[in-house]
Length: 97
Length: 417
Image 1: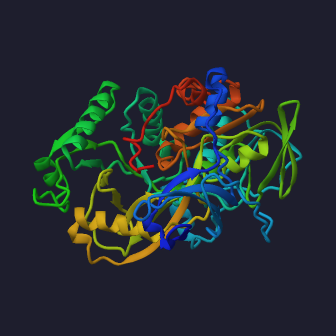
Image 2: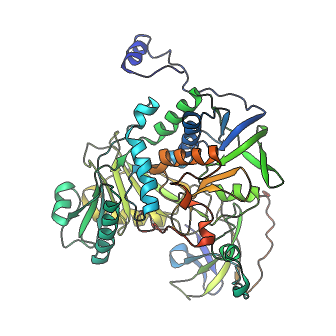
């Protein structure tokens, strides 16, 4: 069970949140010039890292706001929580994963 | 050829108190190079090696496995085998696998305990029933056995299922695939390992891939924890880590990895003689030969490589279970575990070529790869041997995410993701 610190409401149980997958994927602004392969990269291809994952969560049963989380996909440790539009923080990890 | 298993070898070994059974496969050190290296010693990888040797005569093959054989999702799934998929592409692929299952124990000379006990998929709303009808008719048009049962017929077929109209999620009806069932998952890995080894394949356990050697866009070998291994062709058949391996080879996949949980109850006397799946209330259950009830839950929503799942998922599954089977409400649980499943956006696997020449991937089976094990290995062996996709595998190429030819099987996949 994750205990997720919502930047607006504080620490809450995983139950209250909806996972909104990988963050920082910008929609292309030059869509008409993209090839099918470039669209595929945007639409489908994912980093899916074993280690720090920069992802979005939504506090569905609370403030209903989206925010970003930097979380380890092996230990589930949450390193950082930051608002939408903020750049991804660099996470220094001891185990080097 | 290894010792042939039969009633006579069993009797002969009984005389010597079963102390003279020979090993089922060798454990050789890796050779400097191979024609084909298969990464991943689960059912799919071992089946690939077996069919490479058996069907294509390619025996200079190694299967490398970072842990032990079948220690990943092969040994963690709920062992359900069926072929009731909606779209033609999937129906043909899974039916190809089911036909191989039907002769597998004889082919491998290894009892995989394949039991075609019938598989019931229940529907709990009007819309659920409509979707189920559509799927059954599509399956029938593909010449695959599948039938619709009314609520009364479901109650007769599986008496312990709560079919009362006052249930919170009343059973409206079900689809039934009589040829569906279960198999012994470990035996599948062991049987294929033994068969591949007997044909000259080297099976190398405790050997983790740390990198690929790629020259001018073409694979030449691998770096592993047991040294460099040269390879003319490499087939990656991993569950749970295909994104990590694709990253090593320099490309991305449309895959996200999630934990999927399963659990078993204490063993009880025979009570359930079929497999029951409910996509709507969300649980799937069968009874093992040891008497334990085997339950499958859903996936955690978030990406994870942890090999354990969250308690809320277990709670949801238990709610569904006691809703459908009030008789199980006082059972105790023996074990609970998780495996990492690699899910695709369309709930179908990826089989075929990659941006790197002579590097092939067979991955993304999501929550339901076990049932496909023989078919997956069979078509992937063809793909590696000839360099071109088997006709059943061709629609499942990575290119479908560029062309848009997705094969959406979320309805038939059984586990929501």
